[in-house]
Length: 365
Image (cartoon, rainbow, N blue to C red):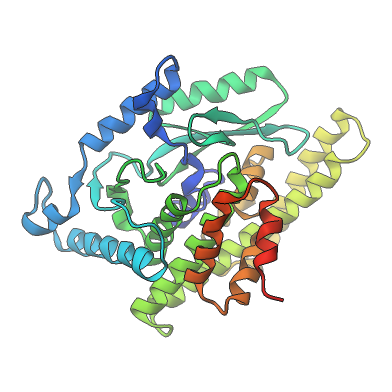
């Protein structure tokens, strides 16, 4: 997602890659819904422009396969194999095709939350059920949706970008041309994240699905870099720094969420809550500005000093990261065996309710 767009670093966009995980594939099978129909047409148009990676590597296909491109395409195939063969993620046709686009992200995304509470605005779609976000292939449509919600009043709205989205196996999801500039860790995390959606998806459970995909993507991406380059490599050190700074950033967002949630849960009136919210945001930016160098090891999140925040931005971050400790505890109880964790998490598809309690029951005491 682009906001807070701290800089052009792709790791920031990667934080929210799955925010557009609405299954646009249903669009081709649906009628009577302008949004679904238009996104379906957009998806089909994109699919028609994809090029087989095998063909590109074999004879160049529609692309001039320069050394950097060849290295990228081979890397995609290796990450794909690692995700399926080593981690046990679902075997399908994802990431076997390449798509050239004229921007550095895949879709525009709209999210919203009550302006005086962390209560998300929800959309409902066939197959996937209720979700906390809405993705668009055309930015104009995203702008219109954002304005529509703002006109309702009482909502904070956030427009961002997603670097990828999952069709949950209905289509073979491609890699995009802009991904050639990603670090190995970012690329591996992204592919593993999205492939997790195709493996573990619980209807009407946006936060659960995104937390699982974020956990598996982050841990799996780091494992991939370690296995391929070694723990002493520059690639691995860079991945660790990226992950550590990301976790610092999420820790700050989680603390901010807690402070605001306490305010919203209080008995004060709406006017006081809204003014106090802005004071909290101002104080937050000031704290980050004065202590950035002691908090972060890279300049990736420097724009936090000035970026505009609202409930929708913070809620979006928490959609992916609210209860991450639960998954790391399960990971540790399985002796650091990510494939075993994924296998257990896949059983969530048969659970009707109490999903996190169910995960807690998996943890070996």
